[in-house]
Length: 238
Image (cartoon, rainbow, N blue to C red; front, side, top):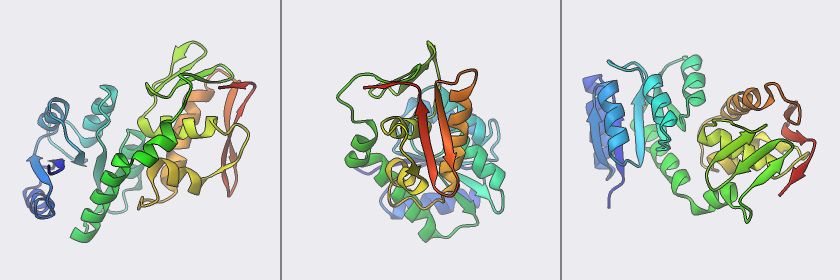
């Protein structure tokens, strides 16, 4: 069965380009040109991947993405950003995007990024590396992690994390006090074939750190300049 891709793009020429080339590659592709309609479609139907423009009528791409993640929808998302718009990339990643493509882009890059994201999300090996645990709860200081449910509780309160933030945290907490390089996090969480740069890791760790370190000291993520990160906890149990 062909993998299903939903394209939410309101610019007719680009929408036709995306639909044609994805269909030629063998994907079952649907195009919607309105942010609100695209959100409803993504919530009501099952898709393997979403390609999401930022500037949309109804709801912006950021709003669509945020609402999807708030409702627990973890369908991988590639955002389409303008050239030299680093703020769009950063904001998109913070909202839970899995990758991005900068316009204008070539067909080869588009298909390569689509294939890479789909491979990562379907890789049993990567999923087991991230979420595999023989115990139902992992504890670090006042932090409790439930790998099978993608839930995190800190000081008795639930901490909402985006999927990639959770996976970064799980990898770090399983190696307390050990320096984990950016390359390690990139390869384990995003996959060896991820095309984006290490900035993606830094953005996710920065957001994760803010959520964890607010009003508590038992769990912290330290930056090791030029190398990576390590998790410091007063106690650690598995």
